Amino acid sequence: MRVILFTGKGGVGKTTTAAATAVRAARSGVKTLVMSTDAAHSLGDALGVELGGGDGPREVEPGLSAVQVSAHHLAGGSWRVVQEYLLSVLSTLGVDAVVAEELTRLPGAEEVAALLELRAQVESGPWDLVVVDCAPTAETLRLLALPEALAWHLERLLPAQRGLIRTLRPAAAAAAGVPLPESEVLEAVTGWHRQMRHVQRILTAPQTSVRLVLTPERVVIAESRRTWTSLSLYGFVVDAVIVNRLFPDAVGDAAEAGRRAPDPWRAAWNAAQQDGLREVRDSFAGLPVVRTPYLPAEPIGPDALAALADAQEGDGPDDLLAPVAHRGMTVERTAEGFELVLPLPLAHARDLSLQRRDDELLVLLGEHRRVLTLPSALQRCVVQGASVRSGLLRVCFVPDEEVWPRG
Ligand SMILES: Nc1ncnc2c1ncn2[C@@H]1O[C@H](COP(=O)(O)OP(=O)(O)OP(=O)(O)O)[C@@H](O)[C@H]1O
Ligand SMILES: [Mg+2]
Image 1 (cartoon, helix red, strand yellow):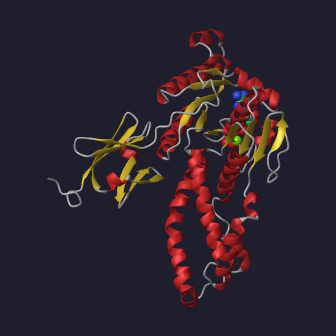
Image 2 (tube, rainbow, N blue to C red; image 1 turned 135 degrees about the vertical axis):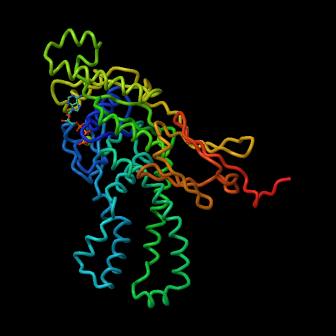
Image 3 (tube, rainbow, N blue to C red; image 1 turned 120 degrees about the vertical axis):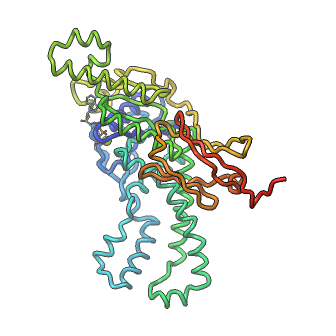
């Protein structure tokens, strides 16, 4: 099953583009689900149908279903078990019940619900294609980074908790004055861990890719460039860029546009969009660029969305369902030791920093961070240097003399 996620800056046309892609796929015989992970939920508005929340996928037309995920999906399940435990701890500490309820709202509950629903649909849905309409970039990055980060934390939390409960339960509970988690709380958390690892595998599989939607404006392009770098840091592959809201003249030839646009306001915007398009091609060199015209009306409903998809031009991936080439982290042998290579398109050395921590390498990029677990060969090495060139981060490792004496 193919999974395509659409993200981009707020308001650029993510929902519209995701819905149009889904309608076109469904009408060409691909059994498609389009799901929205955005709490704002405008997917139903774009499709012109009532989707509600929490009711599971609804058929929009033959071959096309849609679903909007919300945190309500989590309300009954395993989260409730953990929440009840936290409530009992807080009440022991004398926290007012209403305040406690508020405090135990899981940060990122929407995101977790969305990920679990995505997993459920990929696991057991009858689809050939799942199109995901994501929230604006910042939330999407949080969403996509969540499974790995959560799994990482749970891996460190679980053994300690298990040990504590087995050996210290009565004494520790008395000393701390708060209840220790029951085993069902631990089971819930263990279940999350398994599910998060699974979601992570789905998100980084060759059947999954991200498409960046943008408009040809400098501010939007600048954000999209950073998004490409951040997505790559987390190991996600971007396989196309969709430039939306192009004025009819800007889609065609610039000189032609100049002749046809005597109105200075329009001429200025056409010229700006041409510059924007050039900047997009330069910035995202190597990625297919799809151009979507600015229609004279909002494309609402499957027919209008199909018309929008038909009006798209450019070199988008022909076969929607073909897997994408994934270039994750690789390790190469060098004369001195090893080189770890991570694709980080458009990254600058000034925004990056690295930290070595035992068998892990932390890569920090602005506010984003990824913990890379080092392959065993590298665990016995020390970092000698690093560089970023041509979209690749290279970290040189040499054997640690103390661990691997030479000769
Ligand atoms: N190519 C287009 N031509 C005409 N109208 C468009 C086009 N693309 C999007 N729109 C309209 O622009 C508005 C915003 O689009 P949309 O909701 O798809 O953006 P979004 O990126 O999903 O926004 P948000 O960040 O709020 O989720 C909608 O009213 C939509 O119908
Ligand atoms: Mg949207």
